[in-house]
Length: 213
Image (cartoon, rainbow, N blue to C red; front, top):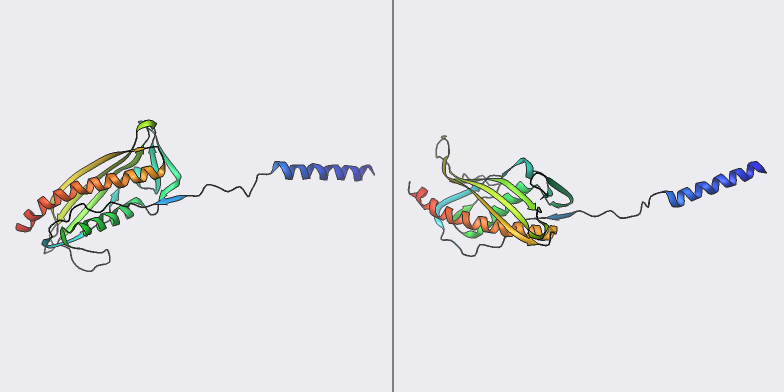
C-alpha cells in the first residue's frame, strides 16, 4: 500500500508540473509586418526628350542597410534591427523598382526599359542607398532618414566606356511624430519623393546638354 501511495503522490506532482510549470505553447507570437515604398506621383509631367532610352541598374546598398529589417538609430554609435517590421523584399530591390516606375511616370524619358527588355539603352542610372534608418536618438523628435547617390551614364555606341554625365548625393530627413513603423515608412516615402523631385530637376538640366553632344 505504501508503494501505491508513493506512485499516486508522484503522479500528482507530475500533473502539477505539467499544468503549471510548462510554457503556454498556444500563446501567439507577434507577427511580422512587411512594407514597400509607395511614392507620391510626380507633381508635374516633364516634356519628353526625344531619343532618350533609359535603363535603371539595380541599386547598390551600404552594409548598414542591406537587411530587410527596419533599422533604428538609438544613439550616436548604436543601431538596432527590428525583426518584426521589415521590407517586403531587400531594400535595394524595391527601391530600384520604385524609382523606375516614378521616372517612367515623370515623362522625361522617351522610354524607361523593363529589367527583362533586350533593347539597348542610351542612358543608364546607377543608384546607391547610403543611409536608410529611423533616427530615434531623440524620441520626441524622431526622423526618417534617407540618403541616396545617383549617377547618370551615357552609353557608347561602340564598345567604349560609358560617359558619366553627372553624379550627386541627395539626402532628406522627415519628422515622423510618434515612433511607429508605419510612421517611419510614411516618412521614408516622403523623403524619397523629395529626393526624386530634386533628381528630376537635375536630369532635366543635364539631359538636353548630353543629347546635343
